[in-house]
Amino acid sequence: MTLLLTVAKRVHPNFSVEDEFTFGIWFELVSEVPFEVAQSNLKEHLRKSDYPPKPASLVGDYFNKSELSVYDQQALEHKELMLSIETPEDECVPMPDSVERAIDQISNRMSFGKFGGDGVDE
Image (cartoon, rainbow, N blue to C red; front, side, top):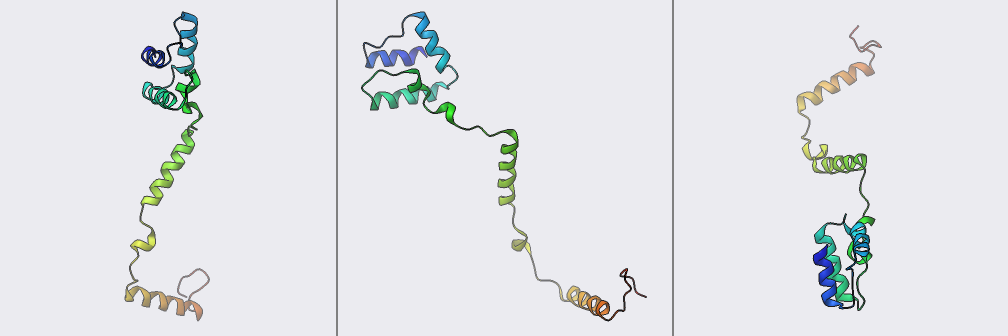
């Protein structure tokens, strides 16, 4: 934090966070932001603005990013897994002739009433 405030002071000589109370406010507002994020946001601010930074300049949109709940994260992982699995159409092969003939025979028997209602030969 001190390094970032020193950089801001070098660019804006009138910028000051030297008293303990003001530093405490900055620390409280920015301390949860990863250093790399705050550093990147400060660089962006210094490139685009003629004014000294405020805590919001270093925080940027870090806290506005929506975090997924555990349930939503699991649902997303499940969806990605399902998309990565081959679909049944990709794995299908033609039915063997012998199986097709057996199904036809059973179907014919059922249509002519050769099977009872429970599917067992009478």
